[in-house]
Length: 145
Image (cartoon, rainbow, N blue to C red; front, top):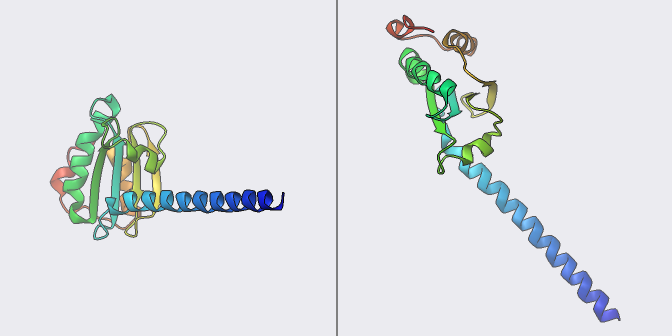
């Protein structure tokens, strides 16, 4: 009877250790997947999570292009098509509920702002100005939505 109790206790302890190890590996994988997505040289990273087949997402495409032109290397713009099999993981990483979703990261990679739906360019300009970015190419701002 004593051997059965010790065996059961040993199995329980090993199970706990395996569970803890799996949890640690899961956290490590999430961190390593998310880490390389931003460029620390840019003051702000703008991540657009959407799809090329979504109407509001399509409306964001020219906005993202103009922002890249206006702010140069102060702003890094990244687009993930979360309907594509190889990019679905970013929807989970960032915990999005709807598309499009815009996420803004500071230089150290910390999220400081999130928006869901179409985000007008002039509102993004105001957000970026509050973070210290200045327009370097005025020609791109003439076509603001």
